[in-house]
Structure formats: C-alpha cells, structure tokens
Image (cartoon, rainbow, N blue to C red; front, side, top):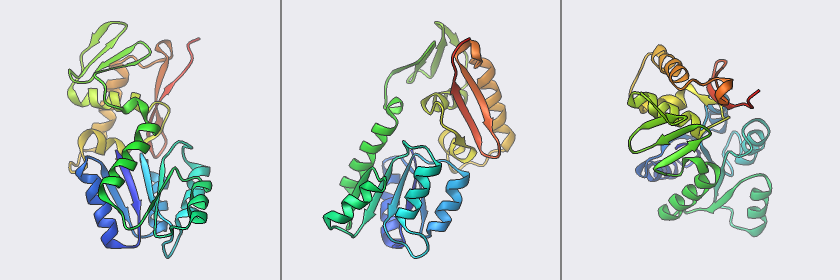
Length: 230
C-alpha cells in the first residue's frame, strides 16, 4: 500500500517509514505540511499518517482539507505527543480514523495501519479467488476469466487489471500505478503505462455491456468505474 507520512521530527519520520517499508508498504515522507498537500493534489495514497503539529501546516488543517476534497474513506492516522483525553477526542472528531501517542511502538504501528487498511480496502485482503461481477481473478495463478472464459494476459497486465478492480471507482494517479505494478525503482516511458491500460481495456472488454468503464482522469491517472447495464 502507498502511505504518506508527515512529521517534523526527522528521526521519528525515518523510523516510521522504515517500519512500514519493512512490512511491504511504499512510504513517502514529509517534514512540511505544505509539501504533503502539494503532492496530495497530484497523486493518490492508500493511507495518511499525520503529526498533530508541524511548523507550516498542522495535521488537523490537512485533515480538514482531505475530508473535503478526497475520498471520505481514505484512512488517516494521527501520531502525536498529545495524550490528554480531550486531545484524542478532538483528533477523532476532526475526522481521524485512529490516534497513536508518541513514542511510537513499532509492532503497534504495524498493527494499527494493517487494521485501518483492511477496513478501508476489504477487496484487497489476500484471497485466492476474487470475483467482480462476471470477472473472476485467480490470484496465485494470475488468471482472469470473463463469463467463464480465460483471458490471456501478461503478468503486468494481470497486476494492472487486479489493481484497477481492487480500487473500483477510485482515481489512481500515474505515480500510484507505477509503484504498484512496475515498482518504485523502475523508470518506464509514459507510453508503456498507457499501452498496458489500452490492452487491459481491450482484452477484458471493459465496456458498458459488461458493467465497467476504464476512463482517464485528466492530468492525473485512470479510474475503473462500475456502471449499470442498460
């Protein structure tokens, strides 16, 4: 999962990022609230971890914007040294999904993040066979069937298709797709992603007759939409 972390304590930021990276997440770290906000305008994340107070833009201010502008189901975890009951209630009332008191304990952090992600993205919980309408994904075999017929896909095409279905209705930025399918360490030409999107759309026959539409999101990325059949 792709996680954005805000904290002006560089040592804690490094620890948090390393802890979550070790269990398979991709972390983007920020010491500036404005820098985080700038990226949130352009890219998508699965979870946000916010310090309560940073010099330029506070966690509550960012959370207020997130709840107004982004998906209401995007999980947000507050990490703060404020331990009074009133502070915890205020954080949750502001729209946070969970609240951790510093100093952070690594095992607790992993457990809380995992719980938030399971609740927010139930379709992404590991399962051998996942069904989306007439589409059946067999994860271990990297196989997709439509109306019982197997669709021949490359591994990258399968990974991309599964990612889109697991995030149905959610706009995914190009950076998010790149990291999820091609990994963050690989530079690929922009047209490579577009070519794979086109192939997935064609091979899986993503059209209204089958209940889905794969659409570009201008200057952002792509979104797979479920639509009613007419």
